[in-house]
Length: 398
Image (cartoon, rainbow, N blue to C red; front, side, top):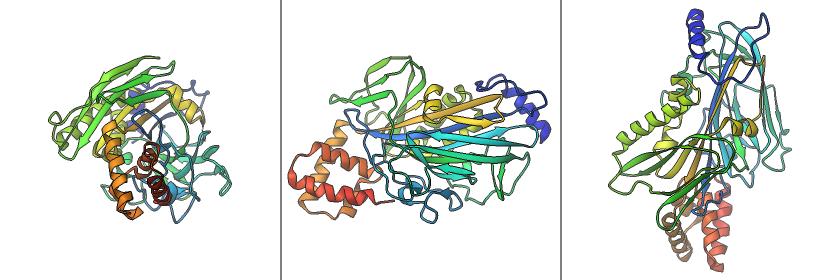
């Protein structure tokens, strides 16, 4: 196992993005790779919609949360948050070292709060019950890297947790807890300089409103009968793309073919950021349902490293010889047609006084941000009153 890891480190050492300096004399070489995603929903006009604190992918019961015993509620927070426009999903940290060593990890989340994690942390901020807004988050871990260690908590083969373990990294031990990686996720209220809008003529526009290049952007669309992915390529600093035509009915491939194609393309883009092939596959397999099998129109893009470092400042001791940080931005897009249908659905529900729970269920995933968009589009006072009640109910859903 030690020889295998040494060979692996020799192979990847020339291809990983450097985030550190050479190890001090006598220190054990250390490589760290991170991947994760953050999710938002935008209106056709491009505005970020609130209400992203709901659970989309349930985690195993052994995962720690700020609200122990009720981790599904508010995505692990001890009370209902407000103003959430981003879900920080499943960042994982992989460690590579030819021998056992101790590491300390500190991550800040200035515009959000880490709400769930594993293995257990040494400390976190804000203090339990102390947060007034979704901001000021921080986490600390003190871990032991143990090559060849096993004995991880059991999960089903099809559990969302399982793919992340299929990576040849060094396992992590904290107290009596063991895992292949350090995991954390949370909620945020932040903006990123990736702009998108869906126009009345059916086309989309996107813009990289930053001085940093975006390595890859993909447009995905899924219906019950088929799906398609379009590689929009890289976006240079300040670059815009207009007149982007989403795949139309009849142009999609069957769902299984589409998922296979999309998985291959996204995995290749992740490898270009510095992730290894098994790390990229683990990320794609973890998010296959949300990325590829959820109906709707979405954009996926590889986040510039400068954005990641600003969003999630990271300190690791000893300082890694090589550090790769790969986040994927996931933007769920409401088109003008989606919004017209949404308005009609809400108006019909209000007219028939449909129970709130029924309408929420009918709208499915992202029900609360959809309802909030409907409240921006509908001016009828009686329907606004109905919507206020439904949104209040939606806020309290897991």
